[in-house]
Length: 351
Ligand code: FNR
Image (cartoon, rainbow, N blue to C red; front, side, top):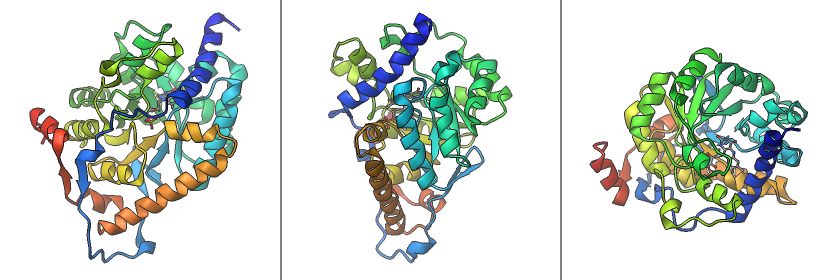
């Protein structure tokens, strides 16, 4: 094994350890406290008529919950992917894999990715590569797991805080366009916790992506994760750097919602967060950190199942209680935006 391969595999394990050690940020919200749904006292909806189905990039999803990109590429994370794939299969969820780079560089760990396709045989599986990845590499990532979609993550802040990270981000948009036009499956551009703005959404849509996962601030923070790996703590400023998820959903929806599907992620934790994101226009949501924390517990399978049961029950209940049978009806309902988010959107000319 080369030194780079070793660093890459160790990094996979350290990311899981960091996310376990850090938990969610206590003082930085994802912004959904500024978003309110209007309750409906006369729903005229039957529980059994409610559908949680949605669609991204022309692909039907039985549930709006996506298990977002996390891991693969080291023996130690095999069990995490196995457990996540089992819960994805059980609840009919799309599941994204962690960046394919370690699996493509070291074929002996490819099995830690492939297990997801083996278990989630007929499900929606999403491959993941980093910004700047060229077409040939992207094709290999898709082939590795027979992916239905490909995520390309944009993580400049993470790279800068990573001792061994990239320092030159030129050419990433051009590479994205090449991948989006040539890879043969729909491409999703995503952030990993610092959010995507209206301006960036337009650039991504112009590059030909079919969806944007906003990866906003308020959940797992990769600036903190990389600082943890180096044994340092970040200060207040860096813990708040980025665009909060609710703001990012509004920005991307306003700028590019007519051209791409918006996926909300970054601190999505409850059914209410999901319903609010969907009411703002998202077509699906991604959840990562809490799922890996559950998957690494001794009773991880039971915890994941209970969490998903509750989340789906809560979502169904919220659709009924806003008088909706599905998410497209929810998108037509009024949403009240308050506080700093309202001011932010006004200041940005997006209100
Ligand atoms: C991630 N995330 C991530 N994203 C990505 O595009 N490629 C990757 O390889 C990884 N790796 C990874 C490892 C671990 C352990 C976690 C928890 C997360 C980021 C993830 O997909 C998501 O964008 C952020 O974690 C924000 O969502 P949550 O965690 O706040 O729900």
